[in-house]
Structure formats: structure tokens, C-alpha cells
Image (cartoon, rainbow, N blue to C red; front, side, top):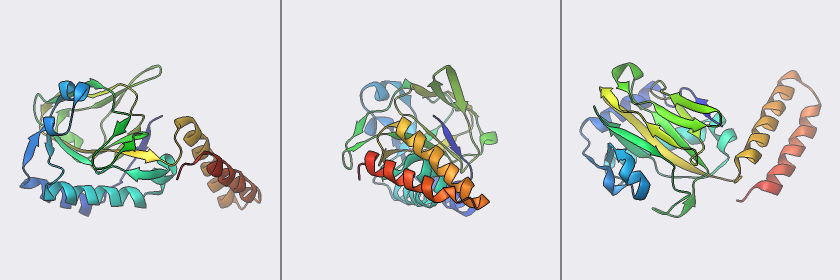
Length: 221
């Protein structure tokens, strides 16, 4: 299941991110990838210890936590500090899946992956995020400030950039609810509850009770 969230970041936040990356020092991906990912990966990243990385990561994580659609979709228990990547001409990320457990700075399960696009799509060619879904591939290239959530166990890749620079923030969520199927049920219930509340229907309270019963059954705080 893919979830697109538009306008996660405001224009002022994108300006702050652009300023932070202007003078930032980029490093080889070998510092942040291993195994299959290291073999497939060809891009640049900000060092996790760099001031620019911390500044951008703080902006992105704060935006995630205030976005209701993100919270409803992922039910976040923990969000990993984002990795800020740059793809110049001829850079790409080959087909791979993400590690089920990531250890630094602390061990966490990766239930949901997400990519926040930081460059105007008209400023670069190529650089699509391609995800192999059941039934075929889906290519994603979104406006700056928008994001996509996707299952990290699905094969995915970033196609070669042929012009310009593609900037993105990538991170992972450990959800309160482990399985995608259970999260999907809860998302549908939450959307139904919102619709009933807007219409003034009395059934909203009963359905909300069912939502909370399932949360108690399925969540792992």
C-alpha cells in the first residue's frame, strides 16, 4: 500500500532546507549502507553527525508528527532520524529491499519506509522512486515538500538522474501496529469515523469504540 501525502513541508521549511544544504559537506554512501544496499547504492548523503543533517532531520520529523494523515497511516511508535541524500547526474540506487531491523542510533523494526522529495521535479530528469507492487511497478516523483509511504519489504529503486540534482529525505517508521493489513483496517475505520462525525451520525461513537478495541488488541506500545 502506497500513501501519498502532499504539502508535508511548507515553503518556509523548504527554503530553510535549501539554505542548510547550500554549504553542506556530502559524503560517500558507504558510511550509511551495507550488504545489498551498499552494492546497489550510488549517491551522496549528509553525515548523520553534520549540523545540516540534524537541522533538516528536525524539520522533517516535526512536520511528520503534526501531519494527521501521516499519523493515521503509520501509527508511529518511533521515527528514525532521516537520511538526506543527493543524486547528481548518472547517480542511482539499484533494486533492493530495506533491512527489517536497523540498529543505529537504536535498534528498531522498519514497518514503513518513506521518502520526502526536496527538489522541484522540473529541476532534474530521472530520479523516479520505482516500487514493485503486486501487479506491477509504480514510479513516484513528487513535488518538493510532498512524500510517499511504502512497504520497505517491496523491491524498490531510484532510477538514474540524467540532469540536475535530486534531493530527498528518507526515513523509516516502527509502527504501534506491526502488520500492514491491521493498519489498513484501522485507516479505513478512522476514515469512516471522520465521515460519520462530519455528517452528525450517531454511529460514529460506536465505530470509534470498535477502533479503540482493535488498537488495544493490536498495538505494541
